Image (cartoon, rainbow, N blue to C red; front, side):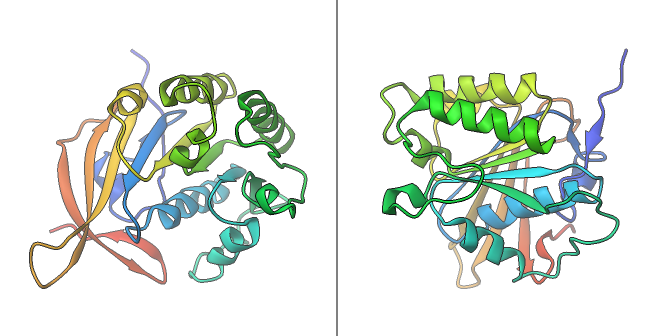
Length: 230
């Protein structure tokens, strides 16, 4: 029986829980409300890939590329050594065209066009030899499309599988139909049941990893997300 290859998530403590990391070429769903750390999680995932010479793509629907790349400067992440790729992260811009200010090599002009989305995503992955992809956010990606979120997710899943990418799809709200199609599901939320607010990571499922579904408190520091393991 072939052993499943795993890749590091970049999230301190998470790989330990998963017995070495996330199964390679998985498509994971990351859910959470505002301020829970979803985008930071996604960027850490991509930055970790760079340490293994795995180029990454960040498809943004809710923020400009400059804001996304600017977030990298807010954390103490080393994006230089031993990285050998030319660019740290490639951004697919599906946000700026709304204001007529889209620029760059990878732009989605019509967010409602599923064919354009597929074409730009495939071209970006092939041209950059990307191994990791983050989509932020899937809910916004679905707003203007005439087909169901399930159909859109299946289309994206086929593309990412066929091009051998390990991927993270960020969602602002749950969708059971989409969750069932994913290889892994992680939920972030803020526990407000006491005066001492805590951020919580709920590891729900991860195909190919031996673990017990559990909840873990985490912090966000200059190093990004860090699970607190007792």
